[in-house]
Length: 171
Image 1 (cartoon, one colour):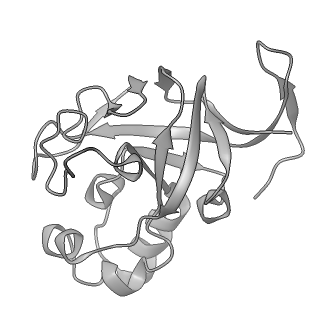
Image 2 (cartoon, one colour):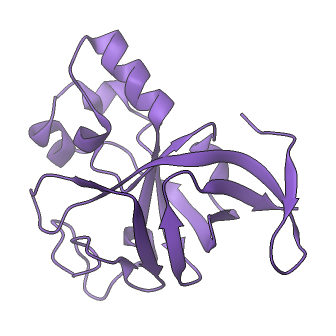
């Protein structure tokens, strides 16, 4: 859902608020449990400081690093709907995405630049559920989160992302 709220950033550019960050999750190693944190540093070409992909040790870490492996986002609403409809105890940590959002339609951000807090990001492609996610959580995610599994994105500017940060589009 797009909000009608507009703000200006530090450069005076008008920004349209889409939603907010409700959770930040990182995993320091492949298969490690996701840890909730309140803030994280985003670095272009590397990812989120402390996360397995930032360290180059993620299950699917490409060599060299690819832009769509820098940061992943998922809608809290999609996680909750899947858990209710499936009857499974599926959580945002099971989804294995870094940034959990509320109020924003992430699929609409493919191919667009946007801000998460002070960090400029480009939506690259949908982050569809895969067999690895199905094995680490529930097989039902393959069907239940198809086209709702989140967004793979590229970090375009270094900065900090915090829980409660706004997600905004430049206008």
